[in-house]
Amino acid sequence: MSTTSPAIPATEYEPPRRSWYKRNEIAVTPWLFLAPAIFFFLFYVIFPIFQSFNISLYDWDGLGEARFVGLGNYQELMDDSAFEVSLWNNLKWLVLYLLAIPAGLFIALLLNQTVTGIRLYKSLFFFPFVISQVVVGLVFTWFYDPTFGLLNAFLGVFGLGPVNVLGDPTLATYGIIAAGLWPQTAYCMILYLTGLNAVDPEQVEAARLDGAKGWKMLWYVIVPQLKPATFIAFVVTIIGALRSFDLISIMTNGGPFGQTRVLSFYMFEKALSEYGFRMGYGAAIAVVLFLIMLVFIAYFLWSMYNEEKGAR
Amino acid sequence: MFPRPIQTQPRAAQITYQALLPLALIMWLAPLIAVAIFSIKPDVDFTTGNYWGLPSSFEAATNYGKVFFASDMPRYMLNSFLITVPTVIGAVALSCMAGFALGVYRFKSNIWIFFMFVAGNFVPFQILMVPVRDLTLDLGLYNTKTGLVLFHIAFQTGFCTLFMRNFIRQLPFPLIEAARVEGVAEWRIFWYVVLPLMKPALAALAVLIFTFIWNDYFWAVVLTQGPESQPVTAGITSFNAQYRAAYHLMSAGSIVAAIPPVAMFFLMQKHFIAGLTLGAVK
Image 1 (cartoon, each protein chain N blue to C red):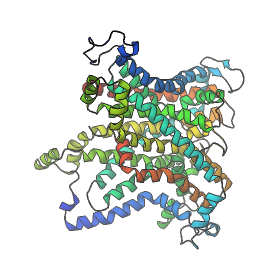
Image 2: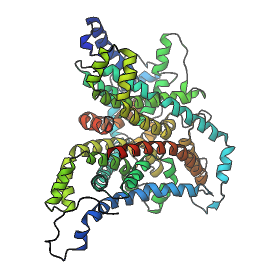
Image 3: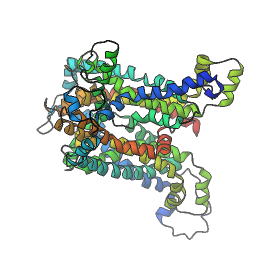
Image 4: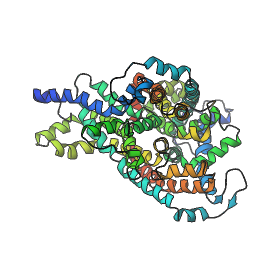
């Protein structure tokens, strides 16, 4: 660390016996301010990441003696069909969750007007995001229910038979993703509403004079200006997709026949459920999830780094 | 403005738009509206199969009364408050200081420390689960609210520091330089110059963190069990197990569990949205 900030220049007339702290104030202060946050963060977030890597090399039930097995857990993962299912489901989540971005943009465009009461509409459209995922999960479980669910009541009007979305191994994951898209779309919508507010009206007018309208206008004039909003929407959606746990736990608990598991859920199941405490194996699954995430984290940090260089 | 203001469109289009809005809203919130309707229905409607007809009687008071006076729900709600409020205070305090340090001072490792917070904030929870649970057990804090609060503070510090640091970067730097020239001590600059300017950021972060922590489920399940320390998100599952198939009560319980963050959002809407969308505009 070095003092690069402009320090107080006139020090010659000060009495010579200033304390060490006073002399190094500018260099020391940031570290004093940072200390508690860094301590907490290292203790609870950074070190545990490395510990997980370590635990994944052991066979451990969380209580007894841990037995070193090297990459044994990872080898076991290769032949684990439940792991494969989880991995595929994670991919489905990642791809389909991204639909929240265009859907959010669509709703934002719909609501970007100045009619009476529009503010209330905006907040009510945003409202699903504020509710906990647990409640969203419950709400959608009942929504899909084959006997009294609103979905089947609605389908019944058209004479379509009852569909047991969450009981069907092929449909269940899509049903849960749809539930997850509900709050996520609301989030993207609010990002885009803020972004649309800041779109340069002069550019829009100029484009209009040049005859741009509709899709062309949206794609060539508006969307480029929404880039910061899109970046954040992308970041939060990817993270949301890979963190999905609450909805699965509430809506299907991994079933039917384990077909709705994703890595984050499978890991929890292996490490902390009635199937026995396999901490090492769970940690190995978490490491795989982390490595997938790392690709995205690296990309996010790289984008931010480039921006920082531009800023200062 | 894009799309073109509806006021410049023909009358017919305006009327269609005005009519479409409430319709779209009802469709958007339909699953939630259904639950709200369930929560005021009597028990008998579910046994007779009257799911979507008019309620045979309005039982809002009975159903919600049961949730509040005949279940563990109030206890879970209290736990949630006792977990959420200290976390908000702790995370905001830590990140104010860290954000100040990273936003105002230039030193070599600045950007790397900043990235440590940002990267940690993106990490999937699962990689922390086994070690953090272990750590909490070792500290004797398993199944206590304190254990949950300490972890939440630490984890939220990542996001909060990112937020605070970016906010402080936007403050006028000459103000701080002027104070330095006057010979004001650095901690006084923080307390008397920077902190007052950070009020909007403090409000925004406080409501955001309140919502995030209130809605946390994963850590509640990992670090606590039982009504003495579980927050409402975890408690609702035991509540539902207790009233299995009593959909009117489960619906009422879910709505009660969702109310505090919703109320927070509607009361502090401006700050909430400002917080969520920080960085969405250049």
